[in-house]
Length: 179
Image (cartoon, rainbow, N blue to C red):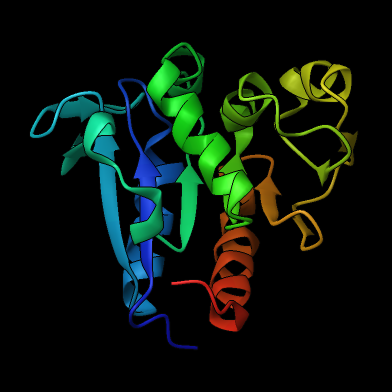
């Protein structure tokens, strides 16, 4: 499936889970998508939990949601930092408002929780934030990947789920009419 002409925004901050950003980044690019990495500072290099570097191509302040077909939020410790940034929450809410896919894995569910956009969705996460998800109104299930196409959310639990998470994102975007 081809994702040519699809732009995807991915969040980064220090202590992201290396595989949960790098694996989807390359899989989506292989499928033809342009993935743009956004961080607090354009040009800053962020380090993953395991030391893998990732440079932000744009700052959160310069993100224009209309330019993107989907949002990817990797897990690790980064989501706990990201959810404290008003601009990150604004971006996430705007993706939701435009009904564009929001893909998150592991602890990344904290970002849409803090954006207050998960009530009533079906999703999964790392088991450690299961209570947070349920308390925010999520219909939480313990499955490798959950595609809630009614609500445009794609979620997974851990790096072990990446082989099903990435194809789910690609399939969803290939069928989407969004830019």
